[in-house]
Length: 264
Image (cartoon, rainbow, N blue to C red; front, top):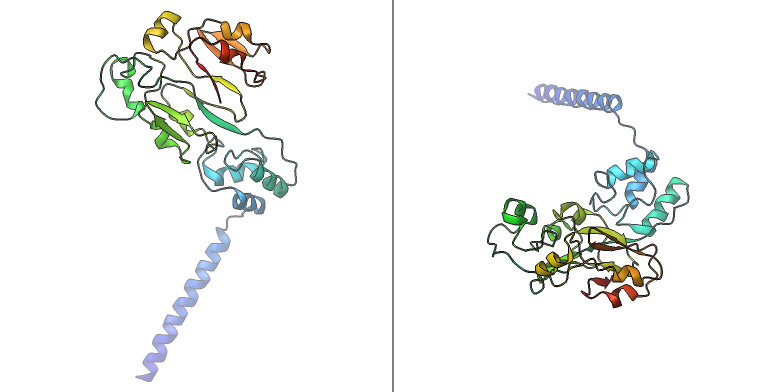
């Protein structure tokens, strides 16, 4: 009886030893070498995995930085602070980065925008490409107001207010998810400290725009003619302000008859 216990114990011990040796050998054979710098970079990244850097999550960015395939300040969420930490790990100097924020080029609220019909259905902007005119609003370029961008934002930085998406630029991390999901291409990333922007994306002629929305750009060129810094251009009946040239004087906003130009 006692010898049977000893035999069973010896068998179990031998099996355990064999499995341990086998797993150890397999671990050595299939060991994946880990780049210490990559691990260190990953440790300082914020871990949001938002994809705003253009890579598949923070691990993808860390690998790219370690290989020299991405800038040390490529993380839009971490910003300058994280960029400096990554630069220190990589033994380089961080390039001066510029904080960005999302901007919605539309002011077509429920009061200002005309409707062709009342829409009842799935509240997802991307689905409205299947309905007449791409949505109920008369303006084919305006915000649809069903919040696909809101659902996509991982930082609660964008909300639909009175039928139009509005960005909280202080909460925005410039990950670009709202930019990618907007079917009307109304959202763009602009410098956080931009002074004035044109809050309209209409490409229609003035009379058509005025019938569709009381807050639409009519391409009158008054903003361009009164800009002392040559920061305004007019293309397809729509004004655009170059934030790099804009000196923030506000002359364009003051002269705009439709009050389409807003402070950012």
